[in-house]
Length: 127
Image 1 (tube, rainbow, N blue to C red):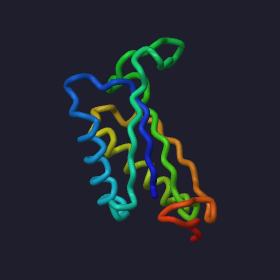
Image 2: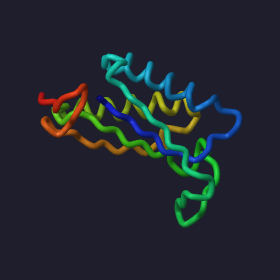
Image 3: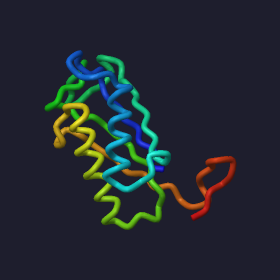
């Protein structure tokens, strides 16, 4: 953990492939946060063009400077607020770097997984 899910409209053709973006974000996020990369998971959900409304308008492509790219990050509940803020800031910076979406157009929501409420590696995890 963390488990990161990115939701975005199709990227414009000048951006690199999503598969490259998520590998780059994973690598840089792990290095910047001192979290072993084997514990960093990222999925990318492309929102069908025309299936995103922002400000009452229908949007068709993910621009760098208009409607936000939406990220959900699941982390263990033992992180202190300062660490959560650090993870959010680092993820926004790195995501911006690799997608071209400006930091102030990235929305990240944190969800916390509680000890005993996660099944991984064949068992219920407790911390």
